[in-house]
Image (cartoon, rainbow, N blue to C red; front, side, top):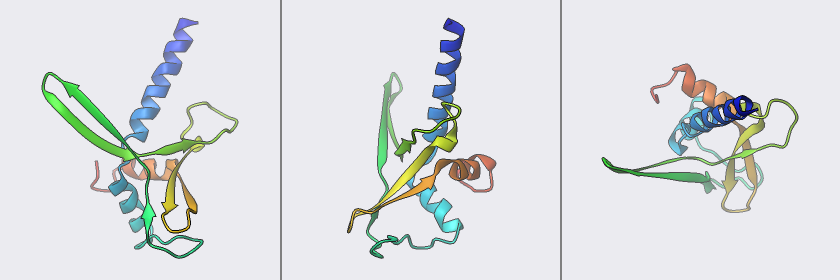
Length: 119
């Protein structure tokens, strides 16, 4: 039983590390390279868009560091518990509040595939 808990914890940590690779700049670059030069709200057409972020602060003997990554949501779906297919990024319109969703897996595939200069 402890082996299964350890395996589940390792899968969770691996997924977390992968999800934390995606910065707001990388998500914007991904969308730009897919032909979205300026992101506009699908509902009202506004360009006043926000990408929710999380900040990670680390302190240690060598000092402190801080970094940001794009916040994500997990869908309640069947299938493997830690599948990236169950995660999405939100892009929110600051004008009307409409929320756009972008699947995590193509963004991570692009970042981890090396077809960008963002590694």
